[in-house]
Length: 175
Figure 1 (cartoon, rainbow, N blue to C red):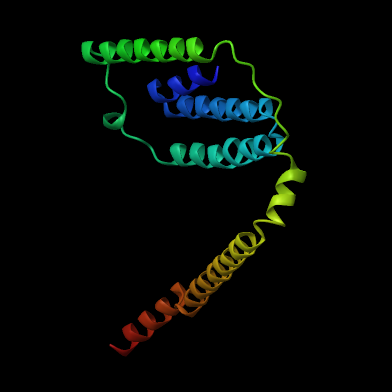
Figure 2: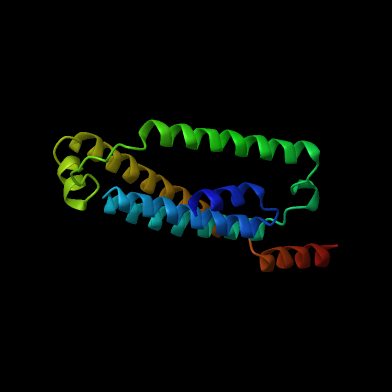
């Protein structure tokens, strides 16, 4: 399902449909994380990519009206041949992988992506990068607030339309 939806992302002419197929691909990646016993990564995948990024992408694609000239062109012989060759190459890769690793069983893995395991790693081995990242995010937030307040202060010092009207009335009376 994930591979087919990823193929539909790049072959679909409608950008909204392509975005929805990309959403399905993100959910499939999250499901693969669950099968690898990395539940926290699956939750982050679904929340960040499927949630926030896709909503942003859909709004941006709906706001920006893409002209017809930028959309995909019609299929021709060369594009059909390239899709067939890509399919044959993919089939050969799948067959080679199955032949090489078909009889092997996956070893029992300890859970790596659980919240407990991630928390133990972050607050033991990676405490310094974690704290540095928090300082960088804090500096970015303070800078954004400073820039936003500076823009708001500049807007409040600009004259209104009423001020312009009063000045133009005074000038017309003096003439």
